[in-house]
Length: 464
Image 1: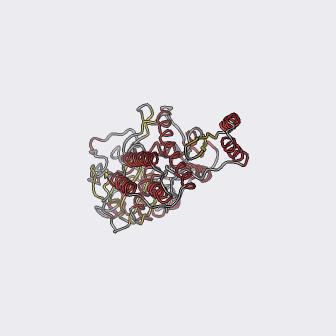
Image 2: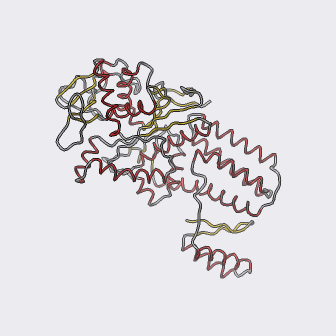
Image 3: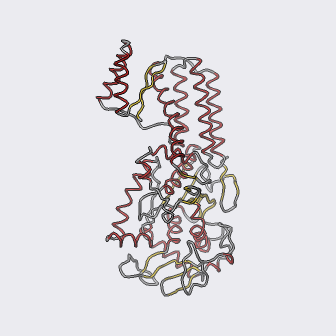
């Protein structure tokens, strides 16, 4: 049975789906006013792996992750650039698609836009209004948190201890500093929609409540997002959803991934330690970045540095070299049967992988299991020649787990005709024992970014 750490219960619990064999997951997506950064990538990779492991375990997964395409940040950035909010979102959408795609993130089954769900937001606010949870100030309709007695249950904070400050809007006239806006009245030059309270636009928190309701219903299995969303965003989602749909409605489990830290401080623009995915991808392959994330449990912080990326690159290179070697040997090997020893190693590795992933999606442990498996197979290959069936069995196991991890196999590598001809020319030079020409060609290929490795079974190449 899969165990997950549920933020609401503050402990690991057995995952029991609402509907047997099915999982409904909602993950808060980005506000599309700027490029995707490392924090976005961490969250996207974390929940991508969680989603893929449920699929590995034969669950039917419905995965919803939104784009927030209307809020203060969107409006301010659009004004700065002299374009409309809609034009800004259309400009930024492809950036996320490109960068998430490079990280191997599966496209969500449903990727709703906040602006497409304003009617549902208005309906929820009206339902809260009828139950007496709202009041009106000069700039909008507010939610009165004191009316929801369990406010703070997710973040484990007491209402009386909360103060105005970080991520809490300060506004004269609010009954409590933690009261939050549901509907903002129209301002000149801002996008707006008609409502019973007048022209305006939704507040941030109501957006996700409406989109989860629309696409997953009044109750669903898992709500995910970054740790920074626990308060106030997810706390407010609960507060505005349970009064409408009933106690115990909304999300059954809450999951949050850890921060990206730089020199032990949370990554942020204000501290100047902010990195976009595009900047990182200019220096490191996106698979290296994904591998770096997977080396740390999703709930733990990642203390980002170039050293960490270099370590990830070295570890990933060992996997890629191993697979490349297996494929080369596969072309040269003969038929046969799988040995009991190899079969046992595969079964041990599969059990270890599943045991790690069943334990709250422990990718660090899972990678350790795969690494030990690779070492064991390397020892076998030094002592004996593995046949085609055995090599295929090893590759099949790695392909199975890589459907979840997404790092072990590289996309099909190819070289241009000139490089391919040089590789073949060098092979012929070695066979004829013309080592001077062989070394010269090796150096020429190295200048073209191709490194050769001569093994007892033949020569393999890889890009650097």
